[in-house]
Image (cartoon, rainbow, N blue to C red; front, side, top):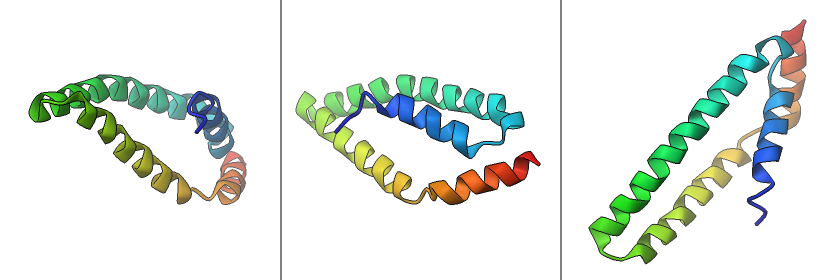
Length: 90
Protein backbone atom coordinates (compact mmCIF):
# COMPACT_ATOMS: atom_id res chain seq x y z
CA UNK A 1 0.00 0.00 0.00
CA UNK A 2 1.21 3.44 -0.84
CA UNK A 3 -0.92 5.62 1.40
CA UNK A 4 1.45 8.60 1.25
CA UNK A 5 0.93 9.16 -2.45
CA UNK A 6 -2.85 9.04 -2.15
CA UNK A 7 -3.09 12.76 -1.38
CA UNK A 8 -1.20 13.77 -4.51
CA UNK A 9 -3.09 11.23 -6.61
CA UNK A 10 -6.48 12.31 -5.31
CA UNK A 11 -5.78 15.97 -6.06
CA UNK A 12 -4.63 15.10 -9.57
CA UNK A 13 -7.69 12.95 -10.15
CA UNK A 14 -9.97 15.70 -8.84
CA UNK A 15 -8.42 18.26 -11.17
CA UNK A 16 -8.94 15.92 -14.12
CA UNK A 17 -12.57 15.20 -13.25
CA UNK A 18 -13.75 18.78 -12.73
CA UNK A 19 -14.41 21.54 -15.25
CA UNK A 20 -11.79 24.30 -14.96
CA UNK A 21 -14.33 26.98 -14.12
CA UNK A 22 -15.59 24.99 -11.09
CA UNK A 23 -12.31 23.63 -9.73
CA UNK A 24 -12.18 26.06 -6.80
CA UNK A 25 -15.63 24.89 -5.71
CA UNK A 26 -14.69 21.21 -5.88
CA UNK A 27 -11.34 21.70 -4.16
CA UNK A 28 -13.09 23.62 -1.39
CA UNK A 29 -15.43 20.67 -0.87
CA UNK A 30 -12.44 18.31 -0.99
CA UNK A 31 -10.70 20.33 1.73
CA UNK A 32 -13.85 20.44 3.87
CA UNK A 33 -14.31 16.67 3.74
CA UNK A 34 -10.63 16.17 4.56
CA UNK A 35 -10.90 18.39 7.62
CA UNK A 36 -14.09 16.70 8.76
CA UNK A 37 -12.45 13.30 8.49
CA UNK A 38 -9.52 14.53 10.60
CA UNK A 39 -12.06 15.28 13.34
CA UNK A 40 -14.37 12.28 12.95
CA UNK A 41 -11.55 9.73 12.56
CA UNK A 42 -9.89 10.23 15.96
CA UNK A 43 -13.27 10.48 17.69
CA UNK A 44 -14.38 7.17 16.19
CA UNK A 45 -10.99 5.59 16.92
CA UNK A 46 -11.23 6.65 20.57
CA UNK A 47 -14.85 5.57 20.85
CA UNK A 48 -14.05 2.07 19.58
CA UNK A 49 -11.10 1.80 21.97
CA UNK A 50 -13.27 2.96 24.86
CA UNK A 51 -16.18 0.63 24.02
CA UNK A 52 -14.03 -2.45 23.53
CA UNK A 53 -11.37 -1.67 26.12
CA UNK A 54 -8.69 -2.63 23.61
CA UNK A 55 -6.92 -0.29 21.21
CA UNK A 56 -6.26 -3.15 18.79
CA UNK A 57 -9.91 -3.11 17.70
CA UNK A 58 -9.53 0.56 16.83
CA UNK A 59 -6.59 -0.27 14.61
CA UNK A 60 -8.57 -3.10 13.00
CA UNK A 61 -11.42 -0.69 12.29
CA UNK A 62 -9.08 1.21 9.97
CA UNK A 63 -9.10 -1.80 7.63
CA UNK A 64 -12.86 -1.36 7.28
CA UNK A 65 -12.44 2.24 6.09
CA UNK A 66 -9.67 1.35 3.65
CA UNK A 67 -11.82 -1.41 2.15
CA UNK A 68 -14.84 0.90 1.82
CA UNK A 69 -12.63 3.54 0.15
CA UNK A 70 -11.19 0.95 -2.22
CA UNK A 71 -14.68 -0.27 -3.15
CA UNK A 72 -15.85 3.29 -3.83
CA UNK A 73 -12.80 3.99 -5.99
CA UNK A 74 -13.54 0.92 -8.10
CA UNK A 75 -16.75 2.58 -9.28
CA UNK A 76 -14.94 5.67 -10.62
CA UNK A 77 -14.76 5.64 -14.41
CA UNK A 78 -11.81 7.96 -14.87
CA UNK A 79 -11.70 8.23 -18.65
CA UNK A 80 -15.43 8.85 -18.91
CA UNK A 81 -15.20 11.48 -16.17
CA UNK A 82 -12.33 13.29 -17.89
CA UNK A 83 -14.30 13.42 -21.13
CA UNK A 84 -17.39 14.69 -19.31
CA UNK A 85 -15.37 17.43 -17.58
CA UNK A 86 -14.07 18.58 -20.96
CA UNK A 87 -17.60 18.67 -22.37
CA UNK A 88 -18.77 20.75 -19.38
CA UNK A 89 -15.98 23.27 -19.96
CA UNK A 90 -17.40 24.22 -23.34
